[in-house]
Image (tube, rainbow, N blue to C red; front, side, top):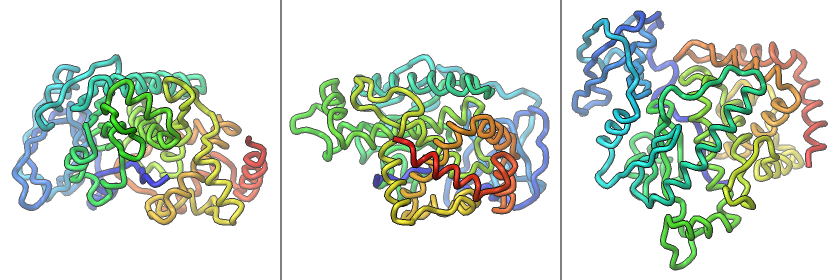
Length: 388
């Protein structure tokens, strides 16, 4: 698959170099910031989740956004005793619409606010897919004893009519990578952003009306649609996971775990009229690539995969690493479910904005899955060799 995917954070976890300290209990902060040289001052309000000794902070705003504010970006600050009250559906919709170009409309569903400037049919199809995913995701982890819950706010999804408008909006966050990313979840804004995939020439038939029910059906009838549907589900899985309590944004989440978890859920089913069904099915696009790499002796050693995110960030190794992450998450979820759930819980309780060194990552992995990595790898290869 040629599309690069990763959880994206606007700043590194250790961006605020000063030591982090506890924040005041639920006071509301009003700050004026200049995030980049040449920007106009911007006013933000929210709860200071974490504060640094030098005056920097991590601010959670009422729309669910997380804003990492180094001390040098803060121009003024006022504090009052009011608690942070999350925006209602109507308030959240109004705020996001004000940030978007003219022409966007709103499709509401039980758990999502889909803002779009493509066809209503495509927005409804996307919303239906996301609702099914969220219900299945939460039910899946509840059955495994994990403490998950519905998100405290409707989740925001932006759907642009075409790639050009999507790229124009997303380039500030994605930079040069925007041309290779057809959808993404931002842990900072807490939004999923994508565009109408029926406009992609590689899979669109001549005369398609783009975004109509007929066009969507045509899209899903072609093998090239598999990675497109997988991308939507992959990024939406990140969004749900970070909003239902299974994972925590801006903590030291290893990419082998976060990306492997998303690939575990992304498996499309184009034989179904709904394009996605079931959880835990073999993700053959990932599995086949993993097998090819295994046969060629190109798999990354477990210790390196666990301790080093670089293999997921390097374009030369990212696709292969995602395939291997799928295989390991499939193995651990299926054959080490209690250990996997406990590992997830430990990660979710980590402190915000604090990175882990490789030794700590390995020690935490060994604590949950066993100290003998060679023994674990042997079991992994034995079981995955039997997967059909």
